Image (cartoon, rainbow over all chains, first blue to last red; front, side, top):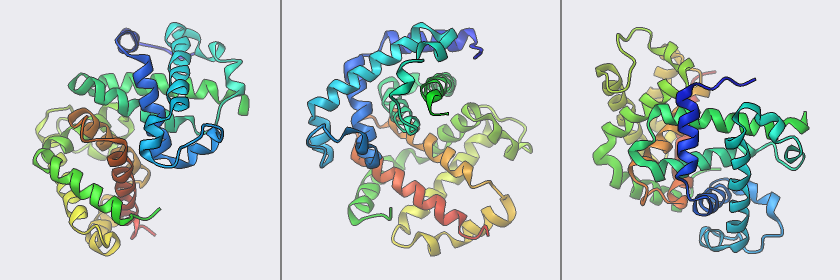
Length: 140
Length: 143
């Protein structure tokens, strides 16, 4: 069982309530495919991923980014049992999810600027670590 | 995954934009590392104050960033350029090289917060590669 402090709970709820899921989802996934190009392996049917501009403009990337962020919502709404919330989804996911988590951290940091204090960063990274670990469960 | 000419240009271009705030970047990155990855505090048990904004953290942030600045200037041969720094980290400081990744991540986060428009995905990948190469050069003398 993961223990959350009041600060961590409030911080996570706050970040996601203010977030534009469509923009952040697209940006995080596109950034992941650009910064860690080997992740493109999982998206063979997405069409043109040949360069950064193509990736940023790719509508399938944008659509999937949205799906990912809305998927994260499940964890935001069930912080006390993220493992159970992702039981079926974990069958679909990759071992390399932490790379997407890193890109999401960077995108949210850029959005919040000074508001992304070290304490907020700690809460956000802890949340992502729990999500990633729950989604990898089916691999072990 | 060595640095291409394009990567080096991107790193130098980004560095030109951020070097004015290098001290702040160093201080912020170090602060985040100590807060978000508390196991790294063990390296600084000799400091009176490990909190963000404290004098030792600010001073050390500057030291770290001047190392990064040196790396930028020696980007064409990091292994020989950072030899002395590698010896320092290997023989005296004995920093576990796993921590280089952690500090690098926090430098990237700070760049995103302070320079959201300049820290494009292209700049991000070049910087990530550069910091990885710097970390490798710093690990050179370890064993």
